[in-house]
Length: 105
Image (cartoon, rainbow, N blue to C red; front, side, top):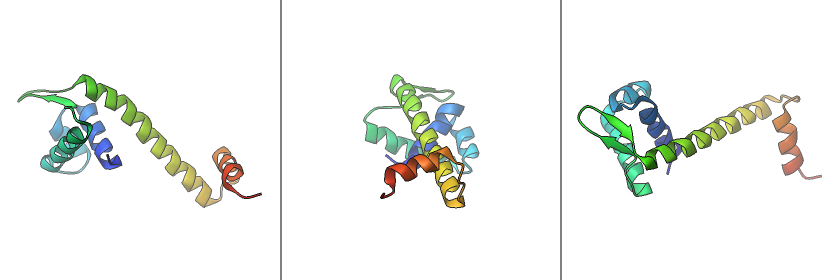
């Protein structure tokens, strides 16, 4: 499972439309569908119910949506934390916590 696939999944889950999700992601719809299908194969169950007029989340899709939201929020938090660290922001509470945990005394 890749973060990219989770981002793609979340775009479709938010939009409930593959075409709009593809536009939001600045990509075409076929590669988006391929990545979502690969994710479904990896987790072993459909994440979306698809019809010619409608896309909806399956129960497994709703479960993954909640988990993926937390994962992607945490990834963004780590990115922000690392930007603060690299920028040398001495007042960052995250930086001092990490330095205490990971720096040799």
